[in-house]
Length: 382
Image 1 (tube, rainbow, N blue to C red):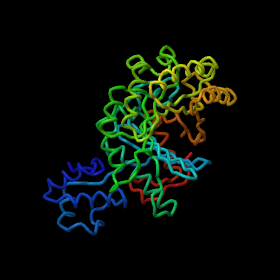
Image 2: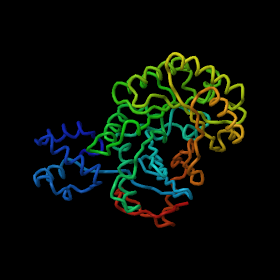
Image 3: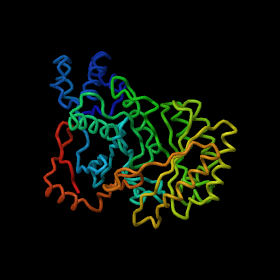
Image 4: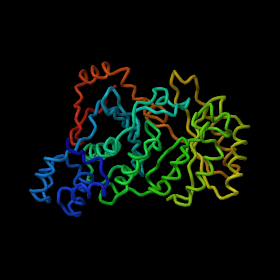
């Protein structure tokens, strides 16, 4: 079986080239062809020796994920559904802004954490993605968007590991993928512009701090353990005190001088004035010990199985004002891609239940399905 070169960070690719009898600089050339130029055929890599291209043809391949569908939101957000085999699919979302282009990437097919407010968690867990499957989402999106937008320069400036799955429960695949994103010979992203979002896997937060520190976002969602255990079951294993201690330790290595706490606003569940005040007390105890943070309040995106509803904007703003008045930097996330189920907490990828329907839609719309980012897809697939 040949090796998929999207599975390797630069060090891994250098070792692969060494096994072929090639020097390290050949790995750098190859890495650039793959990630900076989006090449898929070895014969197009013209500055590689013919003998190396022949070796690569025999021993390696470049294989991104097949695209099952693409949805374009009225606000410019794009969601792709990628086939990862076995009846599973993962979703990836591009969010354009005036000053940035953010790609939200999945790390697992499904999720084992089971947060009440997340539709992915209601799907259940299937498997971890490989490094190639994680990197392949960025590889496809970056080079597709360059062609789609007729842009020669980099389109994606920020990556958030906030798609399907808990990234820190797929650590062995995550770390090489992050290194590809950060490598100047790859995508050259700043550590400040790559964010790993976690529901609170404490031991792996500590490992990430040492192995590949990037920006950290923590799904908090409650001011106390009893409520958080109901909303985020992982809290039973890693309660708030342990989680906040890990966040404090992470700051010593982090590229930013704060941790972002995400807080999904649920009507009548975690959005009351008393809960905002409790959150202020919780944070003040930690900030006095040196933990700096900011809060990102996220309007809930409802789905039928949750039994939950979105807090009113007035309540969200009141909650935000209580935190802000206490000196806590607080923002309210602008929802994007709601009309294509691409907003936070909506990524379900429930292809197991709708594979036949998905295939019929694709046939009806005549969408081109290809792993190559150089093939244009239809603009809409509803």
